[in-house]
Length: 142
Length: 142
DNA sequence: TAATACGTAACAATTGCGGTTGCATTAATA
DNA sequence: TATTAATGCAACCGCAATTGTTACGTATTA
Image (tube, rainbow over all chains, first blue to last red; front, side):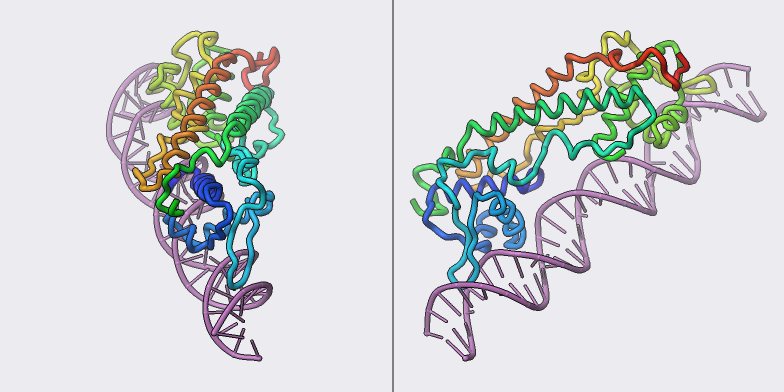
């Protein structure tokens, strides 16, 4: 994994969960399948829990499961839950700046980027996390 | 400066040049105005030269100037010259991977991201670098 | 010949991110 | 009740990318 690894991990995990909603998965299981670390899994899935997509349970038989019907979750929900903002950065923390050209430019670029970010979310909203699980999956055994 | 600093620097500089095309500017002048370093300026503008947007001249009276009419240069030209790829990363170097779900997912996400990247370039192509220089500019004296 | 400016390489400083360890907390179970 | 197994969280390490900086070579003009 390299770029967009948080998003990749989140989508990958939710897609598997969508294929077998009843099953509870531990961070260790998920990390093993995704080739990463349980703590990293908890970090990423924690954001999804905050967004109401997942529930986690502590203790002996604890783990992670979907918090709502898989059919109701889109790629956009996951993207937004992670605060990714692939396109438009965090409001461009530029100083007020004394250069008019710079200010005009920033305003225009920010406008375009915000539009594109909105387009991206709209496109992601077209796809549900249930659209990826094949009839046969070695991970869940179906 | 922080995020997108290369693009910001490039656009800022070209916009000023568009307002006063005849003037030759040194890396030191540009760096001073942009609050950065001459070497950084040469790095960034070097990419624009490779793309045919700028010319640079060494020696005593050397410096940087536009290589083509300012009216013919759009934000997209600058963006592409820098190989920014704000949206879709460098072709997602994921291993073949033995998980079908992961592969399906990657394909779909890449498809959407590539579309969005193209949309971004199309939007940037709508704006020319001549659209930002005001009638009065303290930097160039007009 | 001296001054000036680019071209480039090398290195430092900073930042962000994933990975790792450790420990507290919680819940099921023997 | 004690043990086991899981999340939650904080702290730190290491790696990679980016910017800033210094230094030096090269080219051009006065």
